[in-house]
Image (tube, rainbow, N blue to C red; front, top):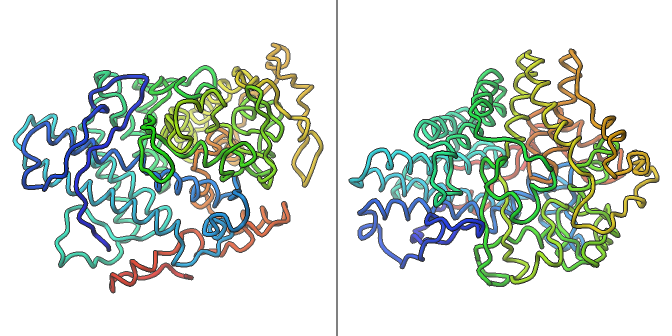
Length: 535
């Protein structure tokens, strides 16, 4: 494994909605580890630096590439097939070991893990308040677990590193999935046992990892391993904690600064603009321009599919706030999505013209939510369903459907939504009778929308849970991993390719494409590293 000596640079990670000292740190001059790591303040600064990897350009972009574009929810988009062609290879399952997205994801994850390990080992030696020390180590162990969660889901077996390595230890073999999952669990258990609740943090610490975030991530780890009882218990504890609630309006979750660190936020990545441009690693995010239509000044990537559109139930208000249609009008700006294969873009990360003022578009002050309370309910619903506790599953599931049912279907930022373009059935996706469902929030209409799930049949409830998870978390870089862990991924992708007459998904090979290839330069550097089967 390639381990680099990287100096600690403290970077601002910020939400302008608050003014936390945790976030507003002066940049730290380059220091060696011998002159640093002396005081409690040094420990705080070092941990803050590790948080920076959450907002890395590489990590944020690659999460969408692997989580959305590799799935049936999105296509690459862009100007043409030659615009980030290595991403086209991801979605067509023809990836080779020189793929730049694979290399980028591998490098950013292991760089973050290296810094997490280095920070833990040094903080352990500092004489400081023991409770604060344990909390800081818990935050960093969460971050390490988070990046290993992505490594195991993208690459499968990878080297497991939990300490700062000497040069003699660089060439590590892969660890088994069971070993990696165990380490993820142990890190998250330590974190949940030593981190404060969200309500126990001071306002100046908004954005730090909480006990609830650790519990949610742990429940998710259990879910991915089909440890249903543990996943149900862990997610239920988060529900019973009273720390989180669903936002009343679905659209508020994705409007800039509307619900930052709000009641539904379990963990989010704060961003502020630093007035830097493309090519600089600023404190803003590139995701809004990455996903915005090329015809409207964006790069046009991560284009939603017709298959995702077809998944929405007629009249579901979430449709308006998940998908942006060709011809929609926002503050006088018409959205032309002609470069998009489906003529759709993601609404969840779209900024209106007035919301783009005052910063470079590649440095947007737009927070990205990693974990929402909605996902806690989905974890609990799925685990309870698989555990045979159908009543518990329905209770959590129907909370989400009720929120969606009562949410406004009117995008308050849009003066016109071009639903009519999609009212004619095409390629087997259903026509949407927007006139029937009116989108005027009439009580008579809304009473018939998204009825509660009432089935007592486990198989039917499983279908309902998976449907709700896809819709609620659409375009939030979760979908590919769900398809893989639910099994029958080869048949699933082949059906997608046949339905939409596309090469996307048609080349998926069982026992090969569930993961992606190890980067070739890692194989060249480490003689004990082996390539994943089939690559």
